[in-house]
Amino acid sequence: MSRIPLLLLPLALLAAACDSGSGSSLNLDDGSDGNDGSDGSDGNDGSGAGTSEGGGAQGGGGPGIDPALADREVDYNEALRTASLKLIRRLPTLAQIKAVKDAADPKAAYTAELDAMLASPDFNARMVKFWRDTMRMGGDGP
Image (cartoon, rainbow, N blue to C red; front, side, top):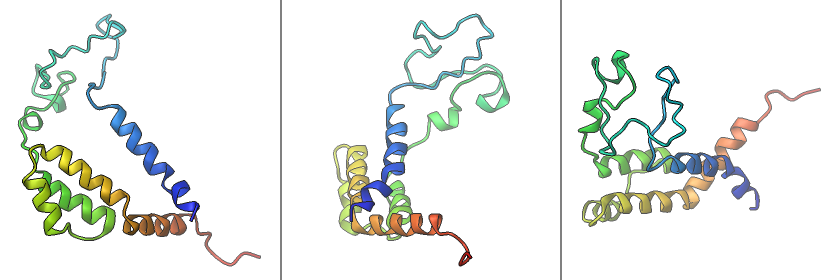
C-alpha cells in the first residue's frame, strides 16, 4: 500500500499550488505602463473587486474582476455536492450537508468535508484506478 501516497503526489502538488495563491491577486501587468510590479502594488485597493474601464475583464479594457463574479453568492452545499460526486462518485450524506449548512463558518466546514473526502478509501481507490488506467500500456507487446 505504499503506492497510494505516491499516486496522490500529483494531486497534493496541485492542491498546494492552488492554495499558495490564496490571499493574493494575479498580477496581469504586461509592463506597458512602465510599472514592473516589483513595488508590490497590483493596482487593486484591497477591496477584492477590481475595476476595469471599458466593459469588464472580457472586453479587453484591462485586467479586473467581472462584476457578476464579484457579486456572486457562494453556495457551499452545491459545491459540496459537486465535489463529492467528482471525488468519490457519491452524493454527500445528510450529516455532511447539515454540517456545512449549520456551521458558523461554512467555508471552513466545506474545507473540512473536502479533506475528509480526500482522505477516504473511496477516493484512494478511485485514484489508483485512474492512474492504473492512465499508465496502462495498450496491446500485448512482442
